[in-house]
Every structure is written in C-alpha cells, then in structure tokens.
Length: 258
Image (cartoon, rainbow, N blue to C red; front, side, top):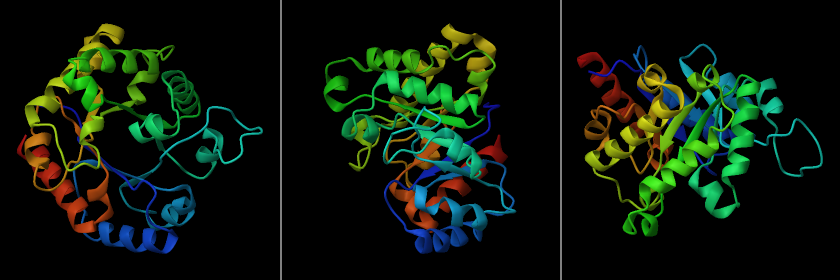
C-alpha cells in the first residue's frame, strides 16, 4: 500500500496563450473539486499572471517549465528563479528531455537550476529518462543513475524532500508509445533505490516519483496503481480538460481505495 501522495502535473509546453489558458483552467477547475491528490499546472511564462488569478482559492498549484540559475544578468530570453518566486510560482520543471535535446541542457546546468530553485523555496520537478537507442543498448540504468546523481549533487537531506522526480523515457514522449506499467515501475523503483543510496531509506520511501511518458486516460489507472509510481507529468493530455480531469479522477479513486 502506497503512503505517498499522488501528484498529477500538467506540462502545457509551448501551448495556450493567456485567453486559452484561462478558459482551459476554468474548465479544469469545474471538474476537480474536493480531490485527495495534489495537482499542478506548469504553463508558459506569458500565462503565469492570468493563471495565478484563475487558480486563486483552488487546490491547483502553479508551476513554470524552466528557469535560470542566476538571480539576474545579461541572459537574454531567460527567467530567473527569483522572478518566478516573486510572481507566485511554487514548482518548476527542470531537465525535461526537450530542454536537454533541443536546447543543450546538461547535467551541470540541471544541477545549478535545482540548487537555485531549492534556495528560493521553489519545488523542482526533476526530469530524467533515456533515449530509445540507450534503452536498446541496455544503458537505461546507467543513464538514469548519472542523471539523478549529477542533478542532486550538493542537495542536502532536508532539501531533497522538496524535489519531485519524473521518469520520462524520451522514446515515449509525444510518440504515442508508453512504457508498460511494469517497465515504468521498474525504473521508478530504481530511481527510488538511487535516492535511498544517497539519502537513506526514510527519504526514499517518501520522495514523489512520477511517470511522464504519454500518460493518458486509457493507461493512467494501470500506471498509477504501481507501487513506485506516485503520479504523472502529463503532456498532451493536460491540454484537454476532459482527459486531464479523467486522469485526476483515476488518481483520486486509487487514493480513496487505498
């Protein structure tokens, strides 16, 4: 029986301007009252202001999709953690595979962002995952181990409690492919074992580990019922109120049944 909270986070990626964001959020809010789980919406920077107003008084938490580790400076196009903190952001996605693949995000920059976010009281959602080539070469565990350990370098035992880790197999993001529940749980458990090695059993037992590879209403129940999967980082399905709230309802039912 899982004792951890299920956390469902929506990652809108580069979708929805302010008007669309407000409409979608209102529709989501109308469908997810009195739930036992935690849910987060990670939205484009331009939507944050209107989203902050739209979720006021609800259980929805607000997240960003990226940040810079420096407080200020000549970094055109970047947003600092301090700026995010000042406008009410509580969570930030760090190290998403699309950032690593398309924008040269490295393990070193991921670590700097993790440290900066934690120092400012923002909860990082740390993304890790392997490519199809790496999986086929039987390098999944090596990749995951390196990504987790390097991202958490110099993160102490107290701070790690505020980190969510999302296992996002790159080969299952936006492709329609999904790891089987057994495959996903196996790697989430492996991540938990890494955390145990770094921080001890108590912390590893309580850290939230999500699955983020094309979770949708048709596969959410089997994935979220796994012992070491504590939620989802939802991409495409989070852009449709019905799909996103169906996943939330599934997670809520699992929590109630346990």
